[in-house]
Amino acid sequence: MTHYPDDELLKQYFTGDNPDYAFNLIVKKYQEQVYWHVRRLLISHDDTNDVVQEVFIKVWKALKNFRGESGLFTWIYRIATNEALSFLKKKKTRFFLPLIDVEKQLENTLESDVFFEGDEMEKSIQKAILSLPEKQRVVFNLRYYDEMKYEEMAKILNTSEGALKASYHHAVRKIEKYIKED
Amino acid sequence: MNKDNKENIKKELSQMGSSLPGRPKKEPFGVPEGYFDTLPHKIREEISARHPAPETATAAASLKRRLVTVMASFAIIIALAISFIVFETGTRNGYLTGTEEYLDEEYFAMTMDFDRGFFYDLVLESEMAEEELTYGLHPDTDFDDDGELIESLLFEMMDYYELSAEDILLADEEFDFP
Image 1: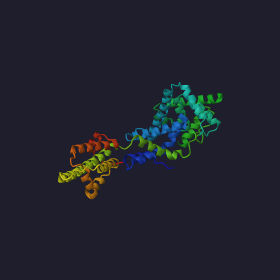
Image 2: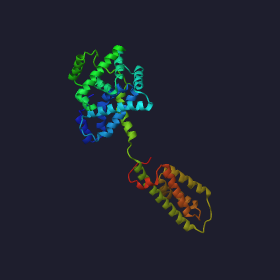
Image 3: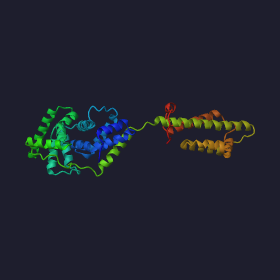
Image 4: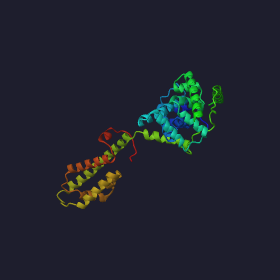
């Protein structure tokens, strides 16, 4: 499916006759990327579905005030990252679970996920990713799976490129160690 | 992501001496069939559910207009009734219980269905209605009592449409009545 460039979509949203239609095009353009980004963090499809809907509702509410200081893609990814992390935080608070238990819960979800289509190696990598601290997990996923440039990641996570590089290196090391020991 | 970046990432892993295979060609997670086809629609539905178009004020405006019509119609009915009663005072002493019940039923039907055409049919077009009205009211009818009846009818309608007096007074927009 061909997607319009972001500036064209924003032009349609702000100056066109039908902003709802333009919003719909934005959803269609970014829904898959946002979904996979959130899914890698939350593992469960149902949780991801809830969060992704929440992300786009937030986008819908805030889009009229979007000033274009960051790119549309960066802005949506930032909202998605914040929503996913805050979902995990709420989950921990709600159930008074220590960090390890939520991660264990995510691992159990991964093991029992009927939609998981990867091989054993891929499952092992996913389990290793779940053993990382949350922010490191986000950094690894953005770089490894979304193949994002550090420059872009820095805008989304509001961190320096140097810190992101270091974080990614640590994450790779830990994942390899986990896989060897698994 | 562009191909150059993909290569950079592979190179980076290799420089780190990593044995990680690189990004899989296919997402390891799956989704229910057709999920992405329906997601934009679900999002729109969720937005509509959480942020419905404002309509309370418009509903109230319409009710206000209709209530005015009802009151005007009642005024016509009462005026007609008065003229008949005044005309026939002293000549009739009958009391038609059956006709009163009929009128109560009509009031009730009107409250529930609220068809303003009913009034015009009743008063202006139907000779039968005129006759019913003429004979339906006791010659000694106290119109203050009828005023209470009209008032209670209006309150019933407000309850039925779940509107407050404030809604009716503040309303000023068009709305298609349910």
